[in-house]
Image (tube, rainbow, N blue to C red; front, top):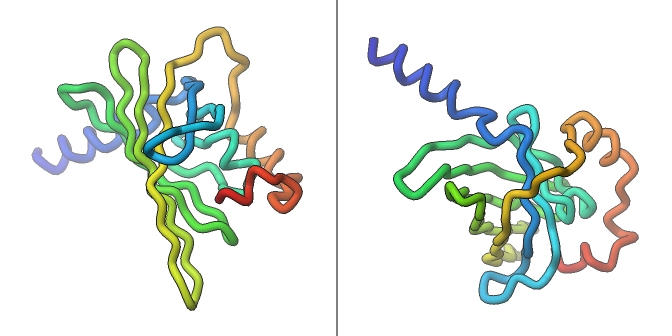
Length: 150
């Protein structure tokens, strides 16, 4: 019976944020300075800025806590590293996400702490995972000066 409850809790934890989006600011933990949006669909999440820089949507998991809904997930890029997300969505619709960016090379590893703070958006056009994957096929991170930050 304990295994059944654990499996049920895990299944219920996936996709809870699907259909939601958040707009806010992302950047260095001490001063987020770029407008960004987070989207959730089909058990995956992505950031508008990160996908434009070649980071693919990644799966996420959620857990209800006393403070709100916690989510974790990873966005990865073949050439730019990975972002580890650890966020909290509060009942008022606010979101705060601590992000650790790590980029490994054979001769060095770069690591930075990033922050996303924002609010749940309403009345937005639904962003779908399948459409984002199609758009990613056309992405050229080298053409965006913004991507040089990542």
